[in-house]
Image (tube, rainbow, N blue to C red; front, side, top):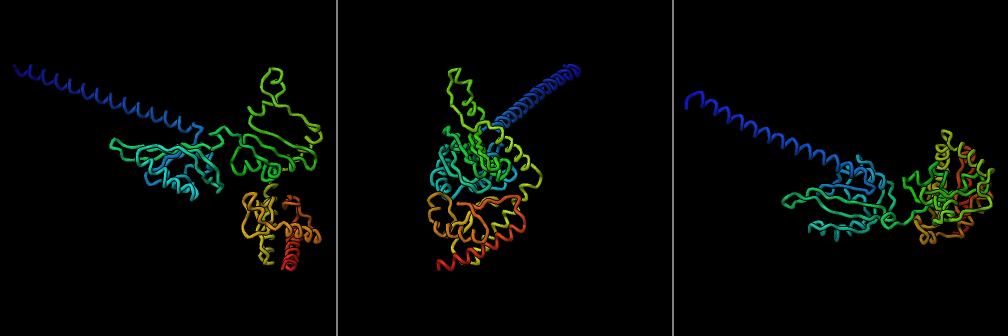
Length: 358
């Protein structure tokens, strides 16, 4: 073989090697492209999921939560990344995690069940959760993840809020707007009607549609909704005028300011009198309980001394302060003079009550 033929063979070999390398490069690019496409698809699915999804590292530190998780718990992704997943659970649930859930995950199994959890405001609610792990080829745990839903959604239970007291008082969105929990149905009234007979039932469109009279003609499931004052134009006009007032800038800020001062004044009066009592509620609506521990449900509320509550209301009335049977309702039209007079009445009434029960 002469030099020219040898050079041709070498060039041919180099071209073949180059083609091979280009093919490998094309394969890697296609593989990477496919991986990126898969990741984009996976991310889109996770972020659009109606179920809350959280991913943590092996120590439990959260690294990702999807938008549904943010909505369910009230923690942003940025805030969630500062938390360990255990921060979401009360001691009773942590005990179940340690004794049941964690051992199952260590074995390589998944776990599914119900646990109580805290939201961002410290409120406890029941949760359905599916827990599992992501492992490498050698079986080492890389990440843990949980798929969660509010227990009412898991079992198809309607969440119904009674916002007769809280509706339009805690804000235009009521308690659900304040705490970020949207019920399936909600009843409200009182604050919206300015004293006129008006009640409001609202909810999900598909549920409210059951009351549509057209369904009756179509032989579909139908619920009759009638009432003497239904669609009363006077009541509806007053409600619209009242909402317009509430929408004015500063209304709820003033309500919060007045309520905070009055509520703190009541707590100060309790401390000065030495009587055993506590105060619960938000600034615009709160109550005094004549017991040592703050009540949190119907049973614990029964620990409060009912006689002292009634007597306290009587003594307040003698000071020119009319208290509702169950709660203090604050209005945005209460003046600074009203606040001062009310707080002074607290001190006088509780002082007298303390002497009576001594």
